[in-house]
Length: 155
Length: 216
Image (cartoon, rainbow over all chains, first blue to last red; front, side, top):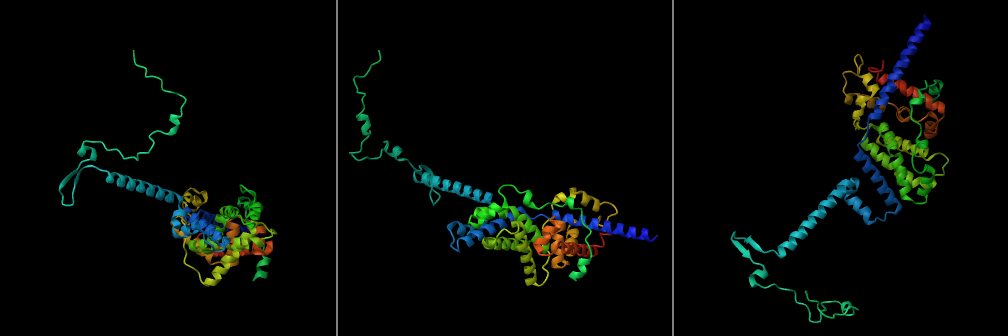
């Protein structure tokens, strides 16, 4: 009778322990955010590099300190670089086009105006003026072994 | 208290379900070589060590504090401390054990300095938990967890863990959550295997009392 009591108690203990272990195992599903972990690792390595350099910070480190998001999420950094590249291209292109643009435009007083191109207004195509001593062909052509003999006319 | 603890043997858990130490399962260069390179000033080698052990150290500090911001700060401090102390590492124990020792000491000191419990700041449960057999069994009909939300369960578990003393929480986290064998824990905490087992036994008893409404 007493043995039975002990056995029941022991079984209850084992069950409780098993349940506790199962509950503890559920804690393994608590997972940190990947981005936070990446940032944390990068912070560690930045500190390590700073410690190694004896507080002498390189430009790279300074950049990492001033714009950490750029390094924490490289994909955003690359995307930002791409957007900046496209924006610069667009600005450069529009600057070039506006410098030599011709056609109809509106003035600040909302009047329509027309800017003819130089060739249209003068009816002449302008070429850049070159200095008189500027060689149109490089010297190698003059030194060629092939000599002009005569022009072949079609029969 | 310690002497009293030592008298009770631990009911050994099923060791086969526990993960082994990462020494045998690591990919790439062995720790020893990376440590040697890092000692010579190779930051890239240390970076590989950080990559290898970051998750484990974060897991330890997180479960010890139940506060993810504290855990992040502590993880950072642990690795920086390890890097600074690396020239003095003589390889008497494995790098892993040495790193864990730093992490445990740092965490205990950190909490002592604060001298009070911080509010819980918990990582989200992975949605995969819902496919877990254990979770499924615990939330089926007749279980006390049936009507409890995941968040409530998470808070209860973490509160119970935080109510343990530092040394008891250390062994529970390392053994029951991270699957580290008693012998390794003994090396990390600087105690005998028997002491580790008895701490684990008492910690589990206390946890059972804390979670009595579920663990019956």
